[in-house]
Image 1 (tube, rainbow, N blue to C red):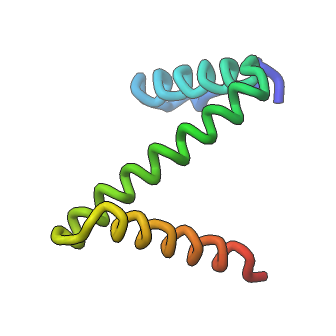
Image 2: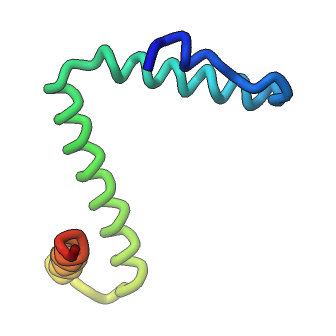
Length: 88
């Protein structure tokens, strides 16, 4: 997709939609310039962040458990996710 194609917006959009489109366009252009090594690192950081968010939810759901028990629940949930993804 060309940079010009990212600029296209509908004529009847609100100013907020146009601003959101421009912000999205800038993110896409930055992502295109990001070296692959940084993209891989960002993916790992995002996964770690998602795990921390999930652990916070597990702590809230099971308030009396140890941190090791919470991490085991997280491991089980990740294993279930992998099984679901592997299904045809």
